[in-house]
Structures are given as C-alpha cells and as structure tokens.
Length: 225
Image (tube, rainbow, N blue to C red; front, side, top):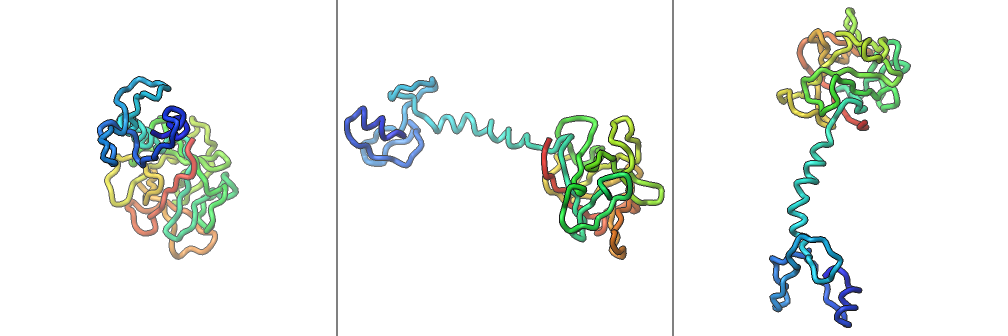
C-alpha cells in the first residue's frame, strides 16, 4: 500500500494512494471492504504481507515512552542557577574565591556540574555537590558567604560542600525537573540567597533556614553527561 512503484509493477497499473496506516482491522473506505493491511508478525519483504503498522505502534509506543521518561538528571549533569533578580550564580574567576550572582547572561562560570554519590536519576531532597567550571566545590562559610575554594576531588568534599535541592510548592522525592523552581539548602539548614539591598558584585549567601523570595532560584539543566 505504501509503495507506488511496487504496486505498479505488480498490477501494471496506477494505484490510488490511501492516507491510512496499514491496519487489517480497518476496511477500505471506497466500498470494496478490502482490509487495509495483512495480519501477521513475521518480518518479510514479500508484497503479500504482513502489513500491520497499527500493531507495531501498539507494541513499541510503551518502549519509546519508557526511553523518554528515562531521560533524567544524573550525576554529571551540567546546570545553571538563576536568581529571583534574573542574575546567574557563578564562581568568581571560575573558582578559588567568592560565589556571586551578578551577570544577566550566563557564561562558562555560570555553569556547574552536579555531583552525587550514585549515578542514578537524582531526586529532590537528595544530597548533591556543585562543581564550578574550574573544578572547585561550592561551599558555605561560617560568615554566611558561599565560596568555591575546595578542590573537586571526591575525598576533599566535607559537610560544607553538601547541598540539597528542594522543589518549591511540592514535596521532595520526585525526579529533578529540567527547569524547576528550587531552594538550595546547605548542610547546616541555611538556604542560598541573594539580597535585594546589595550592589554589584552581588554575593551569594546562605543565611536563612526558610525559603523566601530571595531564596527562590530556578534550576536549568543545560547539558546531560
């Protein structure tokens, strides 16, 4: 049905094209009551069939849906964090010092790699680490500021380098979304924030134990490992 050239070779005549997928359970609309397909499941190049695209759709659509659902955020994903001001969180000079949120356009220093203890799909509420572009862990300091000073060697990360992502308006536990409103919580319970009264360069702090407007961030996944 789908190949005009084969139809012409077999019947030595032109064939009328029908805008249907092959399906033996559907009859031709021209009054002939011929089935629009040939039942069967064995693959063959014969013009005698089988021809049943509808069956293949039913077989493979759950498989395709499963593959799409498996596209999740895992260890190694590259992400960006945008503040409520529209600025992007970055490690100054790529790492080795302060963490700022002062640029309106994301460049390389505004991209972080998600690190975790397992490679499976990550969920909200799980412990993660954020690695700057120059391979420094983000960490919280006793003065409330966030820095990127510690090398990203796995054994170098301590409690100050541990964070959890919390989804705003929903309970934790679900898979991390590719673009989600989040609060980023440090190990001591303080959330990352940018303060409205600061001038440039705008520092990133971890100072409140609740999520308010200044702690509202947007997580954007820009690349998967």
